[in-house]
Length: 252
Image 1: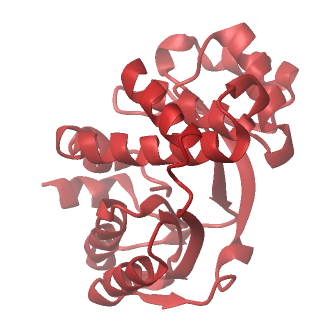
Image 2: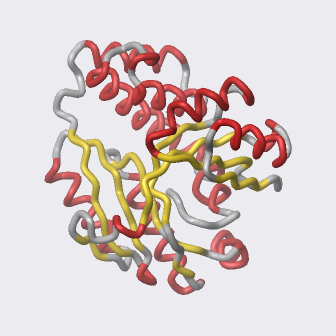
């Protein structure tokens, strides 16, 4: 899930961590298996696999799980997986992009459409909202890695485009943005300077955000939860902007 809110991690990650841990590992394993199948088992020569392993490590996925997923890819598993992107609108006109990795297109399309319909949204055609987002690289580091100036300097030297730092207790730490095509080089350079990141991803970054009031925010969060809980869905991106106060009320 991607959107703007200081409290989103509390509500959608930390608070649900125990409940979704096995589901998260299953999604990470699926991505590693497909990456291994498509580009080989060596992460040094397979950028997609390298990113998948970095994200798995960032989520404390055991090394044995990672190794098994790579082996499955080399054994031919993952042949039937298709990458599909769904797009649509949620409550308050929020644009939503859903990335899925599935072995059954009809099942995935039906589940995603149902999630939109039941939660105040409407699924559209591919491309209906994608023009509102930019495809970029995203590298995340914890706040403990150092202050904003240190990270900013390292990011500039590595060729990154932007750095956002939230150093509060419930913040995201440091989020570094770079060009899609530069992600491999930038992440490698940053790892040499700052150490291993929490995550390295190719994401859909909204060009602008849509303010969402309390009335619509609750339904929007239910939509995002429903999408993220689907086994076929790997990532959900949305261009919402929910204030801290509204998110705090939703938690209460």
